[in-house]
Each structure stands twice: as C-alpha cells, then as structure tokens.
Image 1 (tube, helix red, strand yellow):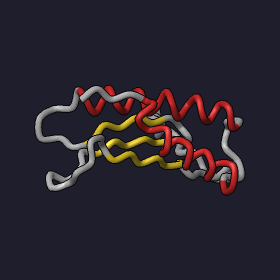
Image 2 (spheres, rainbow, N blue to C red):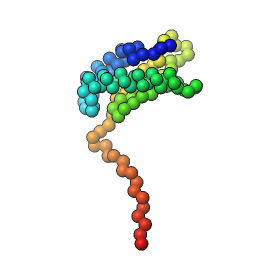
Image 3 (cartoon, rainbow, N blue to C red):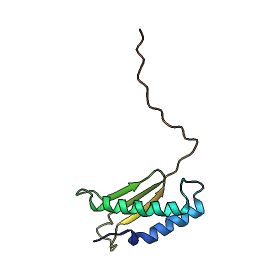
Image 4 (cartoon, rainbow, N blue to C red):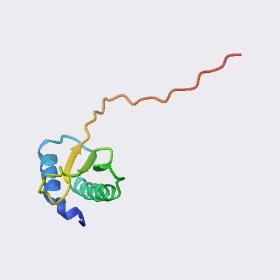
Length: 107
C-alpha cells in the first residue's frame, strides 16, 4: 500500500485543533506546527515502510512533537496504520542535565 501524508489529514487536523485549544506554549506558530506535523508524518511513513521484520511501528519526532504509526491488529479492517500524534511536554523550569566532568587529578 502506498502511504501518503494526505492519508493522515484527519489526524493532523485533530492535532492542530488540540494545539489551538490546549497547547499554551510551544516553540512553533500554528503554521509552523502544521508544517512540522506534515514533515514528521512523512518521516514516520518512511520509517514504517522501512521497518525491520517483526517491528510494528514507524516513529518520527522533534523536540515538541512525536508521531507514531502503528501496524493495525491483524483482525482489523483498517487500510492504513494507526496514527498517534503527541505533544512532548516540557517546562522552562526543567533543569538541564549537566555532563559529568572528569575528576581532577591532584598533584
């Protein structure tokens, strides 16, 4: 089956409605978010189509968004993978982990 970003317009539209209604602050304008969703769905499609045997998912993400395409159950009548769109939550108050410094050797 040939998968395209257009096949997931409903999912992208629902995510954008959630973005407009609930997301307080993300480092993207609504237009940038829509473009990012389309690019990430395209990457997830490629990952899904190139997944190794036995794997069920294609995943693409950036700092604010994660897209997961999942193989539908075998008894499903769905003709396309399930599509999950997640907004990655973070806080400006989240402490960044520092890289451990090598121990100083005294003289």
